[in-house]
Image 1 (cartoon, rainbow, N blue to C red):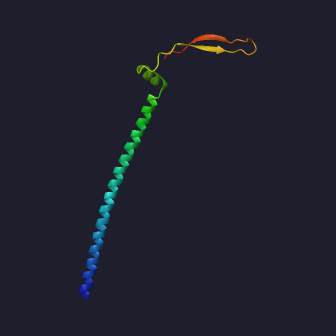
Image 2: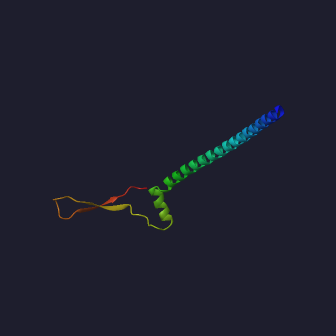
Length: 104
């Protein structure tokens, strides 16, 4: 009986030790997986920031106008544009004046 009890306690200790080793190995594997996911997340955040910065640059009105001209979608706009001044009560017809636009 003593031998059986000693054998069973040794077998239980071995089973517990084997389970502890298996749990430890699983924890290490999970740690590596978390580390890889964090790296992937950091790369995605960096990529998103770069994409947002590029969209900001490309959405600039001057860049859009230049790109549209390169594609032949627009003609060069006039450097002058009409400005109509309305003087209430002074005249029935407004004054029309040509104003030079700012250079690019």
